[in-house]
Image (cartoon, rainbow, N blue to C red; front, side, top):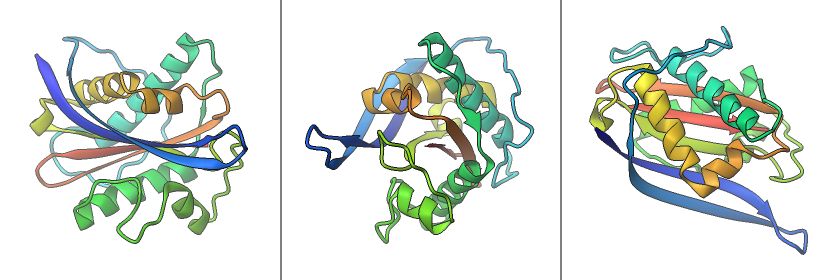
Length: 196
């Protein structure tokens, strides 16, 4: 069975002249899910902003982190390390989007992922991106997700099929990652990856 999804991605790319250019990508598509997906729990530090019913958001965050590293290793890259501060940024942003009913990398006030990181005291000196890079996605019953496992697979499959998100996942300069998930009362989960 296919899963409809909508994702947006953002990355700061450096031009030949050395200027920073902001690019945004929006992608809508359909993916297929496996019937069986095993999970590897990497971090007991994965946190979630909600304990609302549907599926385990902490497990979803852990699985997205694990799958991101699996993709990096498969591509011959070093795995990223879990970063609690980046995970907190991700949770704060996903919860803010749910609380204020928007879905974007920038807040309604125009704060970018890197602006939010700096305001929280986090400095990311990533030379390729000039700061924090972010992936966003949605999951839940409305998208056909019945478990954290099916949601994680769908999220990762959609990101890997999207050039901008794939670039964030496979950027050799990224060394750290925090994943955060927040869920509303309807079981819709917003997932954010924050890379440095």
